[in-house]
Image 1 (cartoon, rainbow, N blue to C red):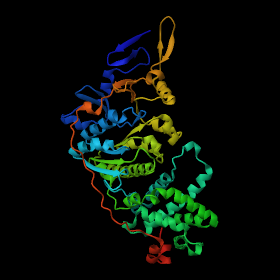
Image 2 (image 1 turned 180 degrees about the vertical axis):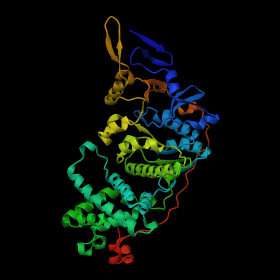
Image 3 (image 1 turned 60 degrees about the vertical axis):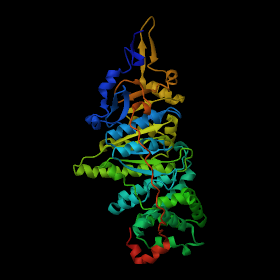
Image 4 (image 1 turned 120 degrees about the vertical axis):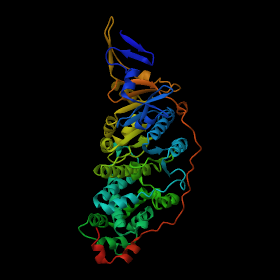
Length: 501
């Protein structure tokens, strides 16, 4: 059996399919040293650290990180990554389920001149205000088609009930589809008739509630509006399909709507927060080094769909801004999505297309997942596309056999020659289960390099400067103005309504 040992890699090398050497990984990465002026020329996921130099992947490659609970994904990868990206003056959007990434890294970002925003869904009332309808409305006013595309994504994610893609029931889809049509039509009505300060979640829920009001259509104010708007518009067709149903069906649709919008109706603090004037403009990430944290509870999934909505909305705004800057020949700041607990979030609409198209727009994704099954349950067959578009794969630890088998196959097989020829995996599922947590062992598949087992350093071992906590400000609680059907009918005559849309 031919085997060459490498002192820096205990799993060694062999004559056929083999492990990468330390020097090969160094040559394929970029070296950065804190304090050097060239530090700002490279930033990415840490591959090696020798106590003085960090070797990072500075390419436009996306990265997916697998590690079960307790595998130290945050301390070995997420926290060092954020610090390194900060040294490189790159912008960040960070999904932070525990708030620990914000607590540990925001003082460092602040000290390095970052514009920091925080959407705090764990402690409502702290941080900055995110109104999910503001960017949608602004886009609608400049380009109705793109605005409605964003609105459609919003509705799709709002309806997502967290069920596996493989087990969705067709009967439920009917009610979801009808409810979605109403929310979409009401969004367009809101954008056409509301004042800027009325474009908020409270107005949307109020208009949606009015669909079920009145014991007959003759007494329904939303129906009165729907009868007068432009009959060639999409909104009119949607309203027609929703009102031309049996009374019992209309009430069933209303019941489905209550379930979809319950996240807002059951939490007045959240609804009021989401209805305040928007303070999050993600477009600035493209021209000014900035970081947006979105903190959400990890012990319950109630707000997870809001996180997915924000991430999709942010991506669309960044892509639009990137296209404008490209046309104008402006230099862009690279933006990095660092998404902890990615596979716990509701599936982001068309995420496989997003991850494919973003590389040429100076956008990178770093996806943290606990398991392969978890990812596949959310994205079904699209999970393969997502993993395939991540040029880097990092494995820390797992007991999930499907993931272990997947990594074993990716690493390939080795032919050993002796008295009897044998073919064995380069690394077995058994070996993968015994990586040392204390030593920070991680298997990396980086670009087109051979597999490599590295020892990642804990965040404390990097000796990054520590600064005092960056305190979140308290949001001013204002009473949000609401648009309802009575206001619309008082502002617009039937003739004016017919010219809308």
